[in-house]
Length: 554
Image 1 (cartoon, one colour):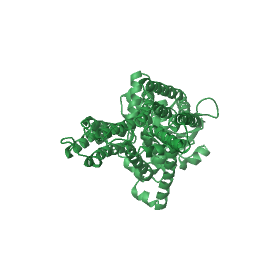
Image 2: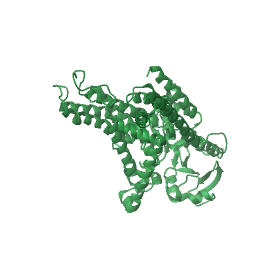
Image 3: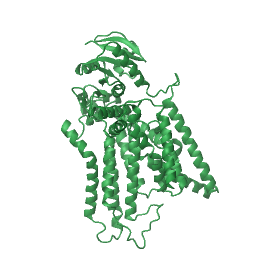
Image 4: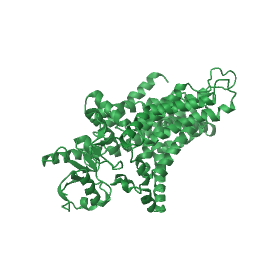
């Protein structure tokens, strides 16, 4: 496929992303709010501390607290880069880099598809599916990790393809022969390949903690290159040795540490541990909302085990069902799933397929059985994005296999059938993406997008607080602290999971004076939302945009 086709896919993708982004006035949910708020803080205050607190896992004592104690920093850094480069402190600047990166996904999918099938139609179909990406489209123009993961995951699989070619092991689509002269083969990759793979894994880790799995993904390719194929070949002297394997392993780890090492040093200097101190506590959640429990010292193995084996098993069974649905609907694209299975089977000898399946399976198991609540509530959706370009690239392979079957069994004419099915798949992709996007953005009460409604409400609440004389350094409790901080600049802490005593205890520790209670209230505060009024320790002030404002009088 000529270069101009890739350029065309890039700008079409960018146009669609900007169009969707124009309907998203604010980040719209806490993950994206967090990266945008962190970017604002880094770019404008040159500080990695956070005057907002969305969980208590690291047991902070005061605000501001050290940044990125749960989520990783790469998306926040990219948001800061957009704000810094433009000199503009708004959401468009914060997501500038994300828009430019997300537009790369379509041509990158086309490139990946053409490593399986060299015909132009395969690249165009994969690129088109990446543009109309179903459930992902509404999130790609945002300050999030989706585009980062998709691009880095694709680059990782392209590097693995290069490693396979370097061994002389042909994929079903390659024009490589292992017979005859093989002087052009090195039987190992250039050393920069191993170092680059480690760097990509490091960047994925800096985007998300589960990026550590991608170090396993790439190391699996090194092991495959070493232990599976080399013993079966007559390797020319000096081409490969045990020392080469260890050097490749060292370069992979070195690349990973070049990127992630400074972060481990930062954690050690800040917390005295390589990882953020609250990260291990999430093993012991008995339900998702306990992510916001106060104090986090309540999260222990004994408490988790005392909940009983029944609830522990049920939670993982529930997560299993949720993640299987996500696999079929989100990653497999519903109607594309059968073609994906065909494509995986057709390319089963391509290293990228077994290694990709291994990495995906490890991710699935971790997000189902180790972190069931986080995984089923979005973790698996996020982590699976790293495999999405490979999935889109395999759809044309599956379609090609299906057309071959129709030609043999039903006497189909290949060109005619291919064009009809390709156009049909593209049309369905547009329809599904349109429906999903409309549901996410629509607002039944008017023409304004529902996306970002909470941030708009926070602006109105902040205006009221200023009217009644609240000082700028007064701390408030809200459901979405990063979102409130991003649009107001006020220090905020999250309403903890639990009853009113827990809420007042957190407010007392951080000197919070106001409680903003919306429909996403902790279950222990139901009475205070359903029947707003004065209660011991708190006085009802006003309701704005369905948010009850209380003054804490303790």
